[in-house]
Image (cartoon, rainbow, N blue to C red; front, side, top):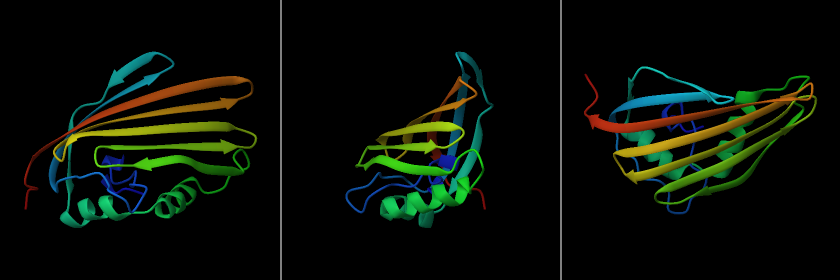
Length: 151
């Protein structure tokens, strides 16, 4: 998947049409995780994105994402089937939804909004239902390009 959602490249763009623009270099990320309304913010951390990774973010296809999700999820007794739905990618907005069915139902919705090639915010909402109980986790990450990667 996008090697930027572990930053954003782990999330992969979803079409060959006009895709999100992302500048290579050092990115500072701040992440907040809310689980059923209780939140915590992780310390800021940096991540280098190479020119090749930034270019890949603009040219990956929906098939790349779908294959990446299936590889990452693997197969388990509780989730027999996961399907990528509603994947869209434009110059400043990327969205997708993943729906898993089986013994454990799960849904993940992702949105990345790019203010410019040096700043974006992602929101991932994951809901997992098992044994009649649903847990919802919302992860919000703000990323700011801060310069060149250290050598």
